[in-house]
Length: 304
Image 1 (cartoon, rainbow, N blue to C red):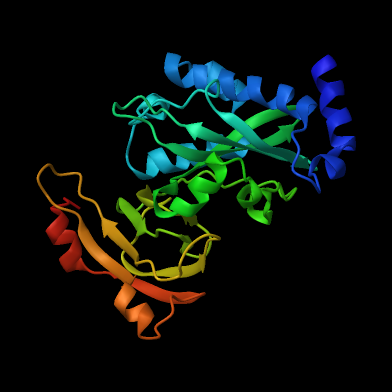
Image 2 (cartoon, rainbow, N blue to C red; image 1 turned 30 degrees about the horizontal axis):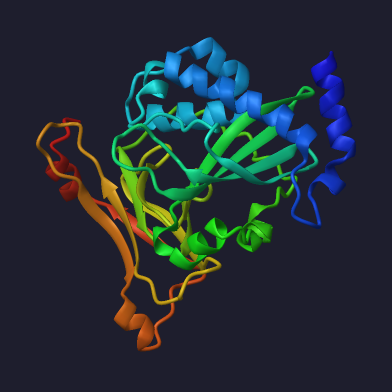
């Protein structure tokens, strides 16, 4: 009951908590951080009931869809991650704000994923949503500042203007509840290399949506790809602090379940620095088609 009252109280402060000046909403901080810590503990302990308790419902369905689309066992595969969720204890909170039933918390410091090596100083953004009077953990963004060295220098020097911009302010829009997939196609991944840029990819009219920020990573396509035509929409924008000259590469791969069979590249969009200097601009919005043919399926060595 006390937690619900605190949540409602914080909602009433939502507009103020979004902050015109860069300040930390301490009450909101005390409410959000235990949620993340409990969620983190659930991942470390591989505790599914605890994970469900602290994870937003729409995120639970999203993760279910992603794992099933990759033909991975559920719920065991929730906890098969390549790194440990970072602790907050060594990080500095820079911007904690809320709007309506959404909240964001941005931290800076040596983010340790437990994979060895010397952690570098980067940004981590945590997202939360309100459900039944309580905050639930949604997702996070890791912002690698290697491609934005000037931003890193400013943050180290105590200039936090970079995290005052709109992208670090909660917008009050709760992500829509996805439909649990009942039919899955061929396993597929979308890959993006986008230093200094944000890339959004939509596969098959909202069935699988993806967002990359200053990333070099791949994500599973929800529902996979099916025979024939699959629609893809691609949008990009430069992030604050970028030069606008960085490379951009987006690819879509079909993945085989047969050991030793390499992924098949079925879509690619790229812009090189020399092309940008020559006047070519990355697309702000591009719609295309991915054609999956019987020849692709033969190469995957899939028995049908």
